[in-house]
Image 1 (tube, rainbow, N blue to C red):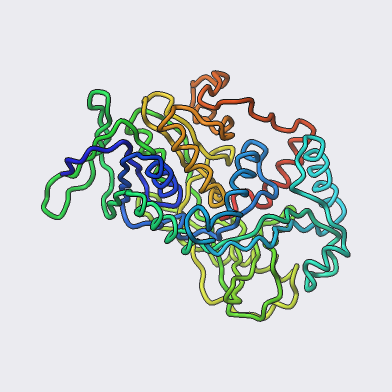
Image 2 (image 1 turned 90 degrees about the vertical axis):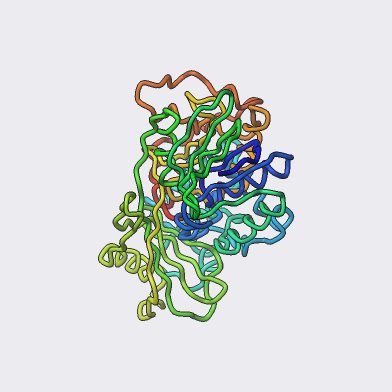
Length: 416
């Protein structure tokens, strides 16, 4: 049993839990992270690690842009650049109709003051991707985007959190959360000696990933949440031939080459998740769709070998936006889950936002669209988010919803 006094208990030792704990501890809070297995066991260890603003949902775009600035100074934040290479992300159009949809999105963003996306024609596209199939007619691109190494990121955020004084408890699931006066008492699995393990603090950060809704239910919040099992493929090592991360408008693909020369191919193709067994099963027939999209774009990879595949468990909300907010019904509890396959890039900024909320009750970071009540049956949808200070930038109205969805679905929900 723990007798230490804490300011915050973080449930979940993935990247978002580690980031929140690190930011809290650096601001003087006494923090413990409770993780059922080990750091990065599920989504954080299975991600493709895309660092992407391209085609972001408008509801999280401002938050994503702030996160991108943090990624460009990641070494200053955690002492390691986490393998981040800002070689851009490109969404390829295979036909004029697809390019027109991308152009409409970019035009709407520009009208609203956003300049991070641009359209490139076939000549510039060939310069960026010399081995791209000649049938492609153009693309949208976010040049500051890129990809990172998820395992380096996990090591860096873990190390930085512990250097800041965070206590990390692994191999301990949470079985109950109880109100204890003005504080919360978290009850974990029994320890090696058979005694119950408990921690008490005035604040809890629920960063439990695919199990976030189950943790929320322990404090009385009924937040609908589904489960994803995004699959990935990795090829044999090849000569370097591509630098940006590539997707296709209207098709499921995320295609990049690692520092080691392997191709990492995903794009939101789904395996079979089992939340209770904590397993993900890859489906080879579905993965073949990603292989087909890859060879359509890059004919030179038609005969390469795939050396391994995997699938990871992650949470998915109805609108594919995460939940990042104070609990609607449990004061002192803060939720951060449901990233729907695109949470990696948001890691540094969401951790900072959570530290703001825990320590001051407010944040200036743009989480106003991530309130859990938008998903909760019977909850007020227009109650406002008084914990977000300042005047959040409204979502662009000149980007038609159909165009947002068409571009977004290309990569939203992909394991990035």
